[in-house]
Image (cartoon, rainbow, N blue to C red; front, side):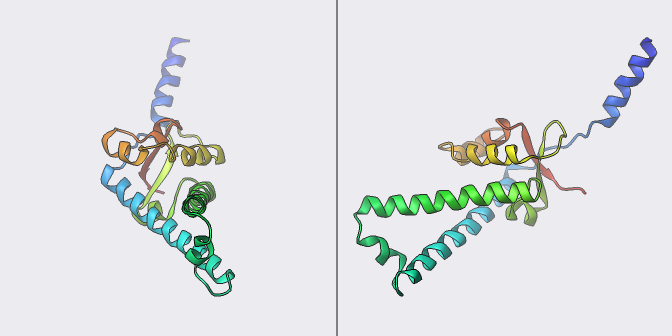
Length: 157
């Protein structure tokens, strides 16, 4: 019986995949690329809203409002784009965004289980924690990884 337990333990050890998280610099590159992509999308939406305003600009559309409304509209557009971008991309590609695709990395579960919509959603929500991007430079693992029990590693398959 004890020999059977030892064989199970050895099999468990052999079945585990050991992967090291990528460096902070690769993660920074992912972040920069994803911020550029979301910035382009936000600007395209604002440009489209300007066109809908009978050829005016987005600023013309919202300048008739007070300054706080302008800030609120811009915030809501940016928030909506970032929320949708990260959630949709990480769900559809099993843990990848355009930044991760370009750097050859992928977000995975630390326990090896398949990446799910729930994790993509939770990772996205954690990205909105104040100072989370700055904390990612100083912590071993960013909050959106440590809270959701995920890691970003080199894609090898």
